[in-house]
Length: 115
Image (cartoon, rainbow, N blue to C red; front, side, top):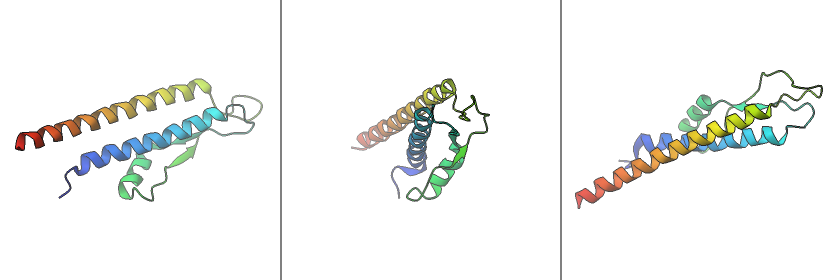
């Protein structure tokens, strides 16, 4: 019997995918001035599903952004959009981490009550 169960696994994989998303977003920001660079987006649902099926071999599902180029250089990165996505991703990671910690405290409390 696994003591932590499916809930912990789901939250762990969700945090892993959020970290992958952080890397994708920061890569987009780093390439803001790279001519011809196409912004990439992580498909969270597909990446999480893949991570839940096989955490060891799970590569994130990353797609090219369909946004049109913003300038003459063919680059379609919009800094404001990326910063917004970065903030949202950070918030969702933090919420998941807090829920994970709360579940651990709940488990610890239940174990303490058994003694």
